[in-house]
Length: 418
Image (cartoon, rainbow, N blue to C red; front, side, top):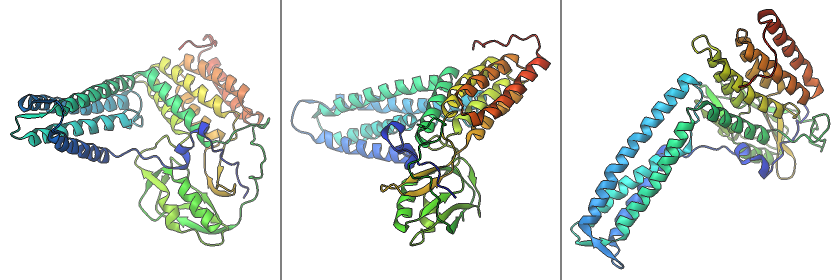
């Protein structure tokens, strides 16, 4: 087995999202931290004896108003979360979780928890004092101002999450970021990465790692952990299950090739981050899947909105033209010495076209404007693609033109205005 092209690491490719798993700060952990900070401020600030003092009863009134207000904000957050997620699932895709997974949602709620804890603690700490430091109401007002700013951002984010143009733009942006991060640069004329010595033959298989637990979805892989474990054993770990696929009990997760010492199975198993849903961090086809979902729902008989499907094709063309000349397929991850340590399975060209375009074209047989836009996409992507990828695109283009000729012979096959 030859080593695939090496993943190019650099700041421009945002590879931190690829080589190390990014788990969002759990909502519970964020709330605990914010609550602890609020408790500390509520205990310490009323004890300040120097500086300007205000009547304690006035400060307590401010704290009560702030405490009641943040409860309303917390209710607003959960109402928005429920309504936006439900609306997006019903109108776009059940897999579209952009708003729910936005860290801003949990950060705002954590701040609300911190303010509430601060208000209650500061009120109790004030006790029977006649005066209290002005820092107490000042801190309450500053925290309230920060909460209002974040709530405003949250409202704008929720509004964008139910607007088609913003959703498509966000999916396209996330898809481009992942594609630029995971695939090697393509400086060669024929679309292949320059030969820098990485494309050598890998050692023979010395052991395999089998998944022993219940079924999980491979959401991310901790590549740094795998590289370090393989480097210690002077081995190569070849991952057999790509990110975004389910991993069943008994499946072969990885092959270990070569090595002076065995790579501990626990290191390989512990590098797999299982989630109930797919994430963007290392999954190049997720944006294609979501865009196709939106287009398929728009073309369903219950919705019948071909203009939305045309907008989806606009976004898909941007992503397909990005990967059309690229060197796709598996990539190697090297250690600091340049030795290949991990081979990561990634989609090849046909998978991108199949996931993003094939089902959409099949569903658009009764939508001539969508078929016409698909034909335009195939022509322009074919111009940007490697020669070896053009036959598949030409076959699809011929099918689209036959469908237009047979089903909609009078339809004008010009550019479609979305």
